[in-house]
Length: 125
Image 1 (cartoon, rainbow, N blue to C red):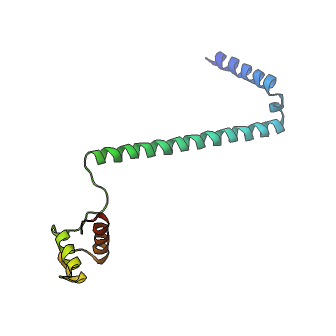
Image 2 (image 1 turned 135 degrees about the vertical axis):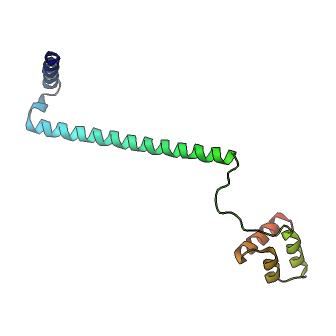
Image 3 (image 1 turned 180 degrees about the horizontal axis):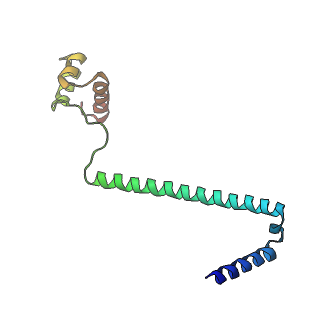
């Protein structure tokens, strides 16, 4: 085993001297170290980008699988009265005012305004 190691070392050093004659000088060693560091940094950067992409892909797969199983993401909606369209129609007819309609529906001011806008755009009221 030791003989194999010494043979390998000798052949590697001969190959380096033949292929890279400047590597045997101090300046050549510095240049070679810089090139090796550059290659190492490029390789680590490539691995990091691949790892990030793989993580994002796996996350997307998990989200898609959860959505296919009916999982709903985000905040839960507050209770809204089931007859809210009728309440909005009464508001449109002038039977009740906005504050009364909002309290009957059980929505916040912003939710009430958003729902009212969406129903008007959809033509439901």
